[in-house]
Length: 145
Image (cartoon, rainbow, N blue to C red; front, side, top):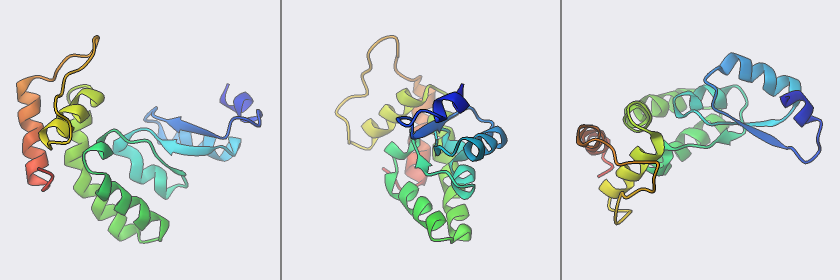
């Protein structure tokens, strides 16, 4: 299906959040489409293998560090990019590893004072207090509160 879509001149890019990076690399090469990582835990890997960018949930809580990592990859400074990617892992895990990503991102933005409320529309519901406490700890340890 993706190969057929790539033949359409209006289809320019794809977001890949399958978690299968090797398959994604093959598809990126075979289709010629621009690829965007949709899996925060794999963003560094995708970028170092030619992805055009990322569509990130965790970046809502720390866009600056994500931008630095992307810029380092673009500049060929993989050592710095790897260090930044490693420093982002706790945040990625806190947002994407337990609860639903959008829910946890909204909780993070609320904890940071960037949203007045973490309220959600159904079918989404608020995170458990233990998840919010863990997220608060990661944000504090990362200097994001």
